[in-house]
Length: 200
Image (cartoon, rainbow, N blue to C red; front, side, top):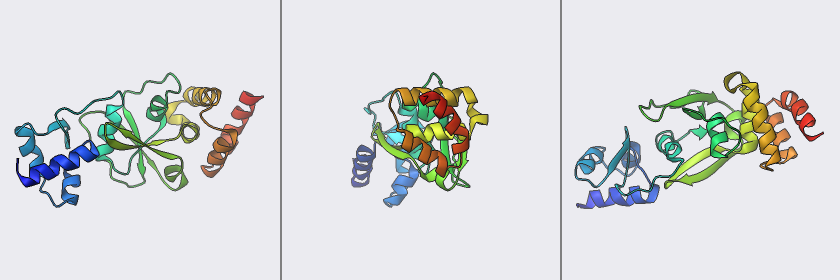
């Protein structure tokens, strides 16, 4: 193993996975990724994303795969609910929020559904989790509930109501947290009546 390959291994060990942009940041040519894969030093996870051959894989591995390539992406809506174990929805795609006009790469696997957010809708309620060594941004439960109501035409009102009820009963957010986010995202007039019925 040469010096550059050792540097790549160090980067992958630290980050959990790498793509060509990660190597470029360190001044390493992208050709090292397929070359090291042929040698068995790296393993291709999906197109453009590589990890160590003995990497541990968790149940949220697909979220890590997407986050490794979509640096400005935040796991949202049904995928965020599934991550937080709220509701019964099982999405067949990874739902990802990106900034309006942001970079949204195509995936062969896993299937990805992009939603373009701007302003407070994008910036508020972001949590950071480490999954399989990769930094994954996911909206908090309260922000996810707000987004489900805001985009109820995409997820369905039933899913939004279920998220509100289960999140509240599981004490995943406070009333103040939920209503403040709803106000900042301009959806308070829709959420508040449902929330008041829930807590009455």
